[in-house]
Image (tube, rainbow, N blue to C red):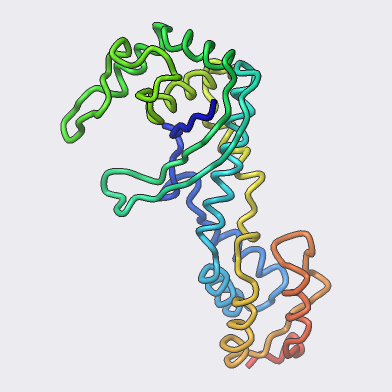
Length: 248
């Protein structure tokens, strides 16, 4: 059976651990091969302007979902990842980005979920998470006995299933929390520099930056395995190069 759930603890991208704030690291990387701070800062600004937030967020969502579902497999032996989708709110005043994961579940998996649904610890989580508070009205009962008692039920929606999946994954972790581990996993595997549009970046560097500066770059110091693509390195090779002491 195919079911979709929304991950309740996914922090989104607005002022979160997944906000792509890489300006400092980018400046350090550029200064490693460009011996002029002004030009390094200018190149840094251009890189940021050509960062593709859409592909970055899709990449984060996919890596996060892979880790999440792999963690579930310690208890749900037959669960398989089917699809991943990231949605963004129109305004960030009341909500943030959401991660939706679609999975295939076996009958045995759903029986396990139904058993976990009856856990007292899960009932306590629901009681706390879905209680009404000033400025917040829950659309879901905070009494789990008022929920459908079978995940196969169409009324057992993506929000309810998301909290149940979160509970299953939390139970499967050694320290009772997966958030730190999943964050580190995403940071290790999602490379920010892979989401820069190098084609348009190169044109801007050549057309705008070189009009103001003659650039001295030690090409031998470039790290081919870092954030620079071979195409970009070739373009740098073609730039005007002057001696170290010949800055204008």
